[in-house]
Image 1: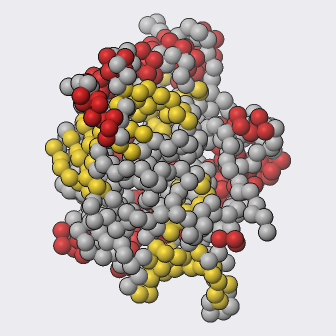
Image 2: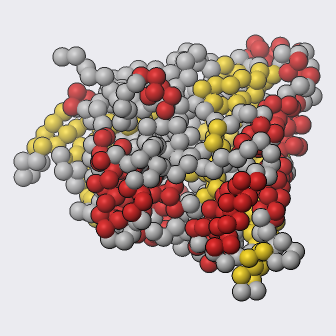
Image 3: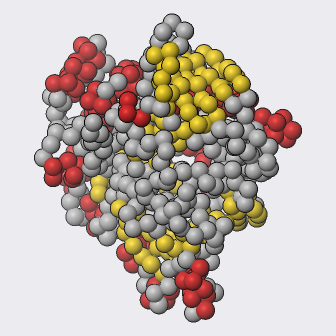
Length: 640
């Protein structure tokens, strides 16, 4: 029997080229069995058929069989050794990024592993990793994980089912509120059935498409270590939690440098998922106060790999000696992920920003076209959708299937009737001058109609209250982008300013809602699921690191349920289109930009597989160190 071709997501450009109606990873997982992958079957009490498998997917078939030797995109013969070093901005005072307290160190969870994991080339599959097999009935009312018996934490103590049970309970007792709010009622019982066998039973309300990946995506902590150390999940930690991963903390200079070393006794070194991966002996992180200092340090080799996030640096900064000597490689590598919807978001808890016309006026004053040409050297595309550059993006007017989902919400008065016939909302377009006069006039009309009238000084107020807006920022590199925007807002009569603070203040103010407008990046997956509630659900609006805009919208909440409950890929795509359409119509953001390539620079002693996977750059996973090339760079004086 010929194996059917598995579905693969496409970018908009690919879909257009194929001339098809393309219908087509977040929380617990994102991508969640084909019958061909079933390792065995049994019958539970009550004669419900039980599947036993090495992995799980909701759509099509798993890409990798149970006996695969290594991932397709790795070099199985990649050498081990050497160091890769990167940079981070600001500082840190904790190794616990599960807590709201403190500023967590970069890669603080590097030692943590989960029961099941995904791959960078199978967007819908999750595979046994800390387990050997899973068992589940057709109803997906429960799942049993048959755990591997060779998994050990980095200090040698074994990992057992008791550790899995402990970890789940710990998250439910001490995890952040937005997580507990979403998953409360998800699991009715966790049972240890043996030293290496654990069962999750799900509530009737738990969305069946998410349950297995949710349970399998749980990180596993050591119960005995937590009890010995007396640490808490909701408090800052001065050392990483004990984990089972390939790396552990080697050294730390608080706030300045981190070095993670490869565990020579790592249990999973020969696991098929790890063949050709975890190739560096050490991963070093250097901290800098700002991006300019970090870039200067890269020029002289203080660190060796840079994933460039500044278009200015990318376009104009790479003219230094190390590059001219051929010591540094500057390349663009393909990125097949959904475009991260980078934006500024409004704080909807503040009354002034609850008026959609006022928000629309503010959005009109950001000139992306001028910014892209004058500031970004044409490197970016405009963000329009929360699922940008994918088949999940809403386009044009709603399809009949979308209308079927939207009509009841219109009938109940939760959405305006125009949503049924209007084109999907696109970001405003502007002219070549920084201040677009047409958009200025349109924004002025919106504010006039909302009662925000310009005084003799040109500044607007209503009932004696001035219209003020503060953009919260932490990065000096963003000043050149925010300042022209502020000038445009002031030309409109808004008393706009920027408040640049240090990283700890920035994090705390975002958490507490002490801002008008703040940068946010919406990272969506190919298989949207229950994690959407952390991004957009009303239940997370009071305390969320994702729902920063504090969105409370009953129509959105209903559509979230529709997306989460979707069982087929077509239904999921339609529901996501409808959700994307409604989110965009709410106008709680000022869309910024995205790019569909990785812009990276590195000292020419790193190598990667010729064919990179679509969904990961993998520089610290499946790239490797060329010792001969590194020695040549040293002999030539590349590192000062």
